[in-house]
Amino acid sequence: AHLLVLHGPNLNLLGTREPNVYGTVTMEGINRDLASLADRFGIGIDFYQSNHEGDIIDRLQAARGQSDGIIINPAAYTHTSVAIRDCLAAISIPTIEVHLSNIHAREEFRHTSLTAPVVMGQISGLGALGYTLAFHALLEEFAKRGL
Ligand code: DQA
Figure 1: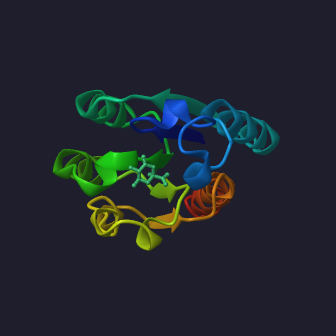
Figure 2 (figure 1 turned 135 degrees about the vertical axis):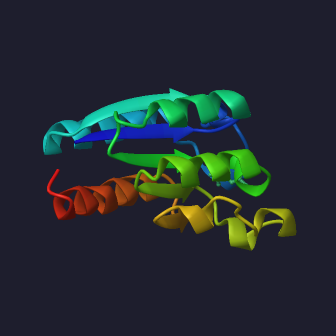
């Protein structure tokens, strides 16, 4: 089975970006942990980060026929992007949405996720652990599908 991990805008700045909100974990650190999990469980894994909505959509579309599951943190696009939501609905690959911070405990404009209704599930507020949990959720899904 193959997994795509997609990081949205500004997540390349993790580590130095608002550490009081996001902690000091870096994107590279998150990716390293996921890569070693994938290795341990024999899962292929690709990583992608972009600050551009259209590039994220192109990468998601390219996952068709290539990836069996997706872990995505759409970052600020979570709250604004009908286009990414439509793309996730169109490709119908099992997807878990992850947020490091608890979006429901923050500003009102972060309480709505346009993407959550079209993915398997959302994990919010657990920091980097959310990515590990998302990985295990997708492993279960792969097993169910005989992948
Ligand atoms: C985020 C939450 C979003 O509201 C914010 O725009 C981000 C990161 C998170 O991981 O907590 O960039 O997705």
